[in-house]
Amino acid sequence: MQNLSARTEATRGDRKPALLVLLVLAFGLAGCASSGQEPDSERYQRLVTALASGQSDAWADLPQAFLEREDFAVRLARLEQLQAQARGKSDADDLEGLSRAMLDAYYGDLRAHEMLQRLAFAAGDESRGDFHRNALANLMALIENSGSGTASDPWQVLSATEAFVWLSHQRHEVAGALYHGDNADGTLALVLKARRRDEDNLRELWFDLTPTYQATSRVLGEDSPNPSELIAARAREGDAAAQTSYAIRLWHRGSAESTIQAVHWLQRASAEGNVIAREMLGVVYGVIARSRSGEEAEQLIDAAVDQFLLAVGQGSSTALYNLGQLYLSGHFGSENQPAGVDLLRQAVERDNLDAMVLLARLRYNGQFVAQNREAALQLLERAAAGGHPEGQLFYARHLLSTDDGEAFDDRALEWLRQAAESGESAEAMLLYGTLLARGEHAPADAVTAVAWLKRAAERASDADTVNTVAWILVVAEQKELRDPQHGLALMEALMTQDTAAAMNAAYLDTWAASYAANGDFDRAVEIQKQAIAVAEAEHARREDGGPDYLPLLREHLEKFRNGETVSEDVP
Image 1 (tube, helix red, strand yellow):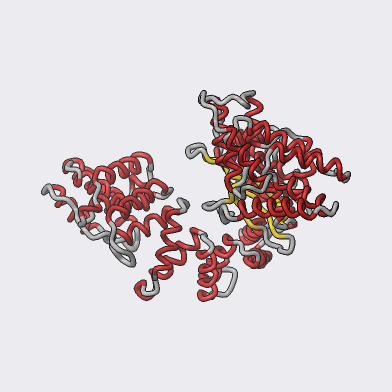
Image 2 (cartoon, rainbow, N blue to C red; image 1 turned 120 degrees about the vertical axis):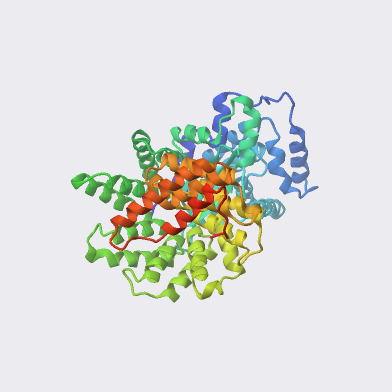
């Protein structure tokens, strides 16, 4: 089994300094504070002196004091070089000298204190051994107490190297890594997939590198790269984590050229054993295969399966889930579709939230498995409790649709709020906003409701959500829920850009009502006539006549002719 942390440790000595350090050195500005004001470099030295003499235990102040030094980047680069030299060394004198040099570079280095602790106890120097053991414990606890390792509450570290060393002390093996940069917020994080050595499940662990990134930006001033530029530069230097991140960004661009480049970078990172790259590369191959045919498509699917199997071998439940989807799609024949369910079950056993939601859907609807809604809801509860937005929304919708929503409780409302706040689900935003607007299962809050409804329309990829939001904004009886101008803007964009929407009688009705709400009744009448014509044509074309909303459309037309607007409860 390949171990990314082991491969990283083995190869880092042959590479350039770590992500943030690289850019400072590349620009040749290390040691030159661009602001013209010298940071408090002396604070760090005073703190080190106090810690080393036992006169202070303020280890928590050490990282920030270090980043205030104008030469911190050079020191981090020196630290990595020394760590690389120490690997494979066994002579006590050599290790002693290298460890001391590491602490000279940064007094909070975990590896240096760990090595000096072992050397001291081996030499029978209990006092010195206790000092470094205590220092190591304090530094380890500092990271442990800085967060919980989630995306919303990451652990704080100075560098990727520190994250790897800390996890190694926590008896974790790292299988994959990528960087997550937000250009707008100016933040940078390291995301690792790792597991404890006595466990099978890989977990996603987040580490915050933002303080070091911002300190680097201070050094570089106007020449400072944004997180994406920094990651791209590191990818070219051979960092598998950066290559994976860079590839994902290229993939999301969607062009043919960026897709080719994304595959190239993912292949390089996969060859380094990065499980995240293998998971992603399998997905990319599968998506590309859908646009191909014949032998070429088969080869791409085979390549996807190869990547997924490599990732499964490293403990990836994500790869199990993706393989399960391939089997359920019927690609390997309808007779093999049940194998997809088995793969989902295996992924669920490894606590994969995506697999829980998909298997819950299958059980809820009786697809490929016997219908068992009780078992489906148990899976949805697990996924919702784990923070899966789709699971949270699915569970909330089920409760609202049964027994008049009597089972919908505060827990379900909180999960729905979390799903909305995830930013991943316009449906969740719409439903949460609607409940707040109605004051159902939640205290009425018109201001917050409107904010969520607008976010839903902005995030939505379907016309129906946009139409629903616009309708509420232009016809709601409660004035606090109305924003006619915004509603009209939504419908103008939808109806002028979506040909199918422009031929939908219900959407035309909303568009007309939007003009009426803004006082333009002539335009409202004109559009409402179009709505009626479309509805009449549909009624004549369909054997069952279609939905009987012609009377309502005609009623609205009369209102607009009389200079009246439409008003009704939130749907």
